[in-house]
Image (tube, rainbow, N blue to C red; front, side, top):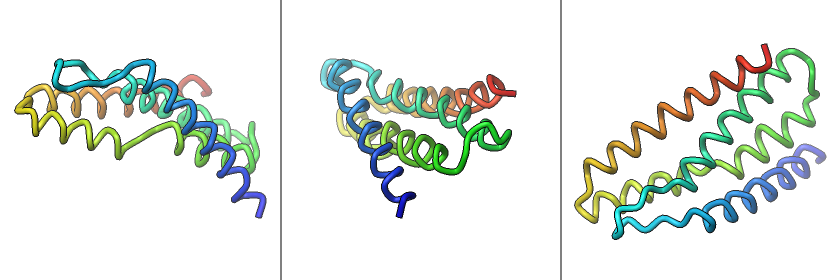
Length: 122
């Protein structure tokens, strides 16, 4: 039962922070703006996930902290569905090249962020 509560609380905090970040960095594909809020949330979440997972592997944090932070917070803070919808918006606005750039930047930065997070702990 404690697992569910920790994931719930972490997810709620992560989702609320993502909402605030997205609102502060609003995205409007009609004006050729880049979705910085989603990108930043996903990169930060990936970085935090790398740290948390490596700390768990190193026995520096327990299972409960992993549930709270990795599954709850990072799961709530990151957003694949918004990322996918923003790409869809690029496509429907005829901005395929910008959409592909967004996808490539997102994938490379989030993978790099996990790696850097892990290497930060090692």
